[in-house]
Amino acid sequence: MITKESFNKLNKKNEDTKKNYLYKFLFTTAVKILIVTILFLSSLIYIKQSDKNKEKYKNFVYNNSLSFAKIYSIYNQYLGDVVPFKNIFKDNTKQVSTEKITYEKIEKEGDGYLLTVSSEYPVSSVQSGIIIKSVSSDKYNNLITIQDKNGLNITYGYLDNLNVKLYDYVEKGEILGTANKKLYMVFQKDNEFLSYEKYL
Image 1 (cartoon, rainbow, N blue to C red):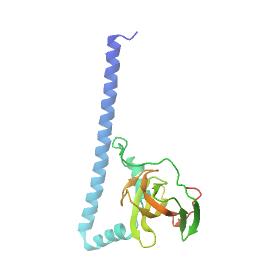
Image 2 (cartoon, helix red, strand yellow; image 1 turned 90 degrees about the vertical axis):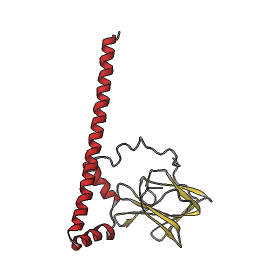
Image 3 (cartoon, rainbow, N blue to C red; image 1 turned 45 degrees about the horizontal axis):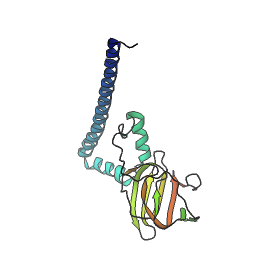
Image 4 (tube, rainbow, N blue to C red; image 1 turned 90 degrees about the horizontal axis):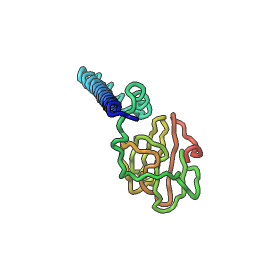
C-alpha cells in the first residue's frame, strides 16, 4: 500500500526530473543559439576586414552550391538535431500521403524519367529534405529539387498548384503540388544520375 508520504516523495521526484529536463533543454538551446550567433558575427567581422575577404566570402557562399546534406551533417554532429522541439510545433495542416507515387507508364527522358499519371495527380515527396531549387521552365512547367540529409537530390517537374516554396523543409509523403497526366523526375547524388527503381 502506498502511503501519503511515499506518494509525496514520488511526486517531488517527478517534479524534480521535469525541472532538470527543462533546465537542460533551455541550457542546450541557449548554447546552440550562442554558437550560431558567434558564427554569424564572425562572418560579419571577416567580411568587414577588407574587400578581398568580402569577395572570398561572396564566392564561397553565393557562387558555390552549399549542400544542405553537408551542413545538416556537421550541425547534427556538433549541435544535435537542427530543431530539437520540431514535434511540438508540428504543422497538422500539411497534406501528407502514405502512398508511393503510382504511374501507368515510365520512360527515360534526358537525365530523368517521364511518368504517365492521372489528371490532377497529387505529387508527394519521396524523401524528407529541403527545397534547394524552385524554378519555372518552358519545358517542364514548375520544377522543384529536394535534397535529403544524405545528399540525394530529387527533382520533380510538370508541377501545378504548388504547396511549397524555396527553402521549405518537407516531410516524406508531403503533397508538393499536382501533376496533370505527366510527371518528370530526376534522381541525383554526388553528380551521378540514379535509376528510379530504389525510390519509386
